[in-house]
Length: 235
Image 1 (tube, rainbow, N blue to C red):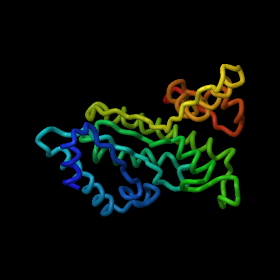
Image 2 (cartoon, rainbow, N blue to C red):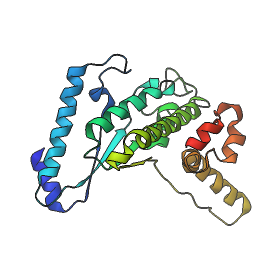
Image 3 (cartoon, rainbow, N blue to C red):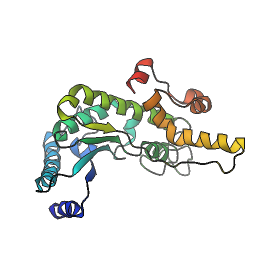
Image 4 (tube, rainbow, N blue to C red):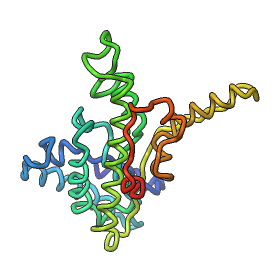
């Protein structure tokens, strides 16, 4: 590891982005049952890695911590509050050395791939020849909604508990694929707008404007959860 980090610094890289495995930092899925020895062992390994990055005489590389990278099982659909407890541990253990944080990586891919297409864990979808369980028309919206609530809760935690001393920044990552109309025809323009709304603005609009795009609410209707006034303001 030390040689790899030295090579990274020698190459002139200005940032080092790494993910933190929830299941290794907190071996139990839920925070009520926690293996302290394993948590400390994993924490020490990350601390050692960061110490190597900072030990180079030419100055440290900006470290970008990634809290969630598709390493969680199906429980995220209903237990997103535990994510805040996991983030709290990360901020407490590593926040003095990590300036930039990403709460969830490629959130739209996790929701679509895991709960609509069933091609990534936990592999849920409506097609029974491909998935043993799941409902693609509903679960994808529930998961996306809970991801947003989890992100919002973590941001609120950081601002209230760590921002003043650690002075870090939190972000949210989605996989972007921009769509352009094939022609200037009205139906092509509308279809393009709809595609961008469902693929990109679905999870970005709530963070910026406090709610989902109108076309998504119109199409999904009762299948998509709604934000309370408090949640819209918090996002």
